[in-house]
Amino acid sequence: MKKTHILVFFILVAFACKKENTTKTPVKNVKNQTFEIAESFFFKNNDSSFYYFNKVTTTAKDSLQVAMAYNYMAVIQSDAGDYFGGQESLTLSLGFLNEHKQTDLACLASDYNELGLNSTYFKRYTEAINYYNLALKFCRNDAYKLRFLNNKALAYQKSGAYLNAIDIYNEVLRKISDKKEYARVLSNAARTKWLQNPNYNPLADFSKALQIRYLEKDEWGQNASYAHLADYYEKKKPDSAFSYAKKMYLTATKLNSPDDRLEALQKLIKLSPAIATKQYFQKYQSIDDSLQTARSAAKNQFALIRYDSEKNRADFLKAQADNVEKQNDILRKNIGLGVLILCLIIGFILYRKRQKELKQEKELEVKKTELKYVKKVHDGVANKIYQVMSEVENAPEMNKTILADKLEVIYQISRDLSYENGDMNLEESFVKELSKMLYAYSSAKTDVAVKGNDDALWANVKATTKNEVYLILQNLMTNMDKHSEADQVNISFERKDQQITVLYFDNGKGMQGAVRKNGLNNTETRIESISGRITFDTKPDKGLEIEFSFPI
Image (cartoon, rainbow, N blue to C red):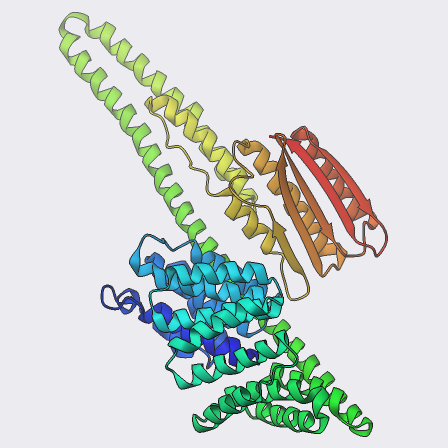
């Protein structure tokens, strides 16, 4: 059922993102080789496809192309059961789209439709309907509008708003021409009418839909029809219900759809004779365990791919920054030396001009000038450079931050000599860096959830305060990773009354051991430095909850 109603549509919508608006700016024009490699693996080898689409998001220059890549990644994640990951990718995709650009509308519609599908899976039907309304707002393709309407009707049906669903199904049935889609909507509409009125007989429409699916060789559709018929006959004719449930199971097995096999087995367990119930239950348990294991593995694989990509990108940017810093350092030294040489030349010219009258006096003055600058360079710059060189030589593992601080001192001295100001270092996005650090601790055994970390939260917060908060959370996350054995970590942020409150929780073994206490002592010290307060709540094997707050 999932494959029929969701997965096939995922594929169609992903293609809609590519093919719509081709009369103006074909999406094909923005593709690069990496994107096309990713597409070639799509639904053939999804791990490879996800890897290359993720690579597109970090290398592509075109915002629409990045949005499309995130859209594909969301499809792959949702199909593998990673719905939270899919929602995250869709949110990132929306961030690269502009509703005022015609070329972006197809992807906007696709993103909102898939958010609706995910919300339906989580039974957040009102939220799903709102997403479908946005998808319809941005959609310019009539065929896809009908599919969006079908999804919206399904959300109404599942929420119990049967009349709303029936109105939409009737509208779609009047307009739809594709036979497979017609059969789907017809069967869904009949089921909804029966749910709304148990006395309604949907068999004529169920049969018509099934016959169309037989003629069209639509096995996914046949699978859905068997499910509807099994549900209808469950109380009226249990033998017929059992027969359709068995057909559904055989079809789902042929289609290799574990979700549909599980649904069919649920029906067979309920309808089968007592002697057969055990074997169906054992099959159900085996498939369910395998499915959960496969989805957990896929979720972890996607997280690892993203982590490796982000790490490689961070390493590349750091190498670039280091190279720029080296070039700037060389430039600063050359400027200082150039200023010194210029001063000597000026002194020499002045000396030549007045040498006839004040030769001895000017020679002495030149020597004094030379000695003055040589002393400044020697004592203020050369000695400092030699000191840092010695420290680096004696301590090759010196922390790069410490080394940078020492070079900054030398730079300030050189700037005093040259009477020039250095370049300002612009701060990167703190929200992005903080999220990157927190999610870096997410692994196959530990799930990390972050809530409330956005630009509005950190508005007007001092850089020093943000730095301390970053180090506090980094210390807590490292402490968790080393000692807690937690499989769930939640961090939430709230800003209220000129104060920010951070709530940290992990479900590990609690605060134990001297190492754990020392780490938290360091955290308390940092909290005091930003005029904040902190509380701890922990019990052995019951997890650790820490709340700290500080003024803005």
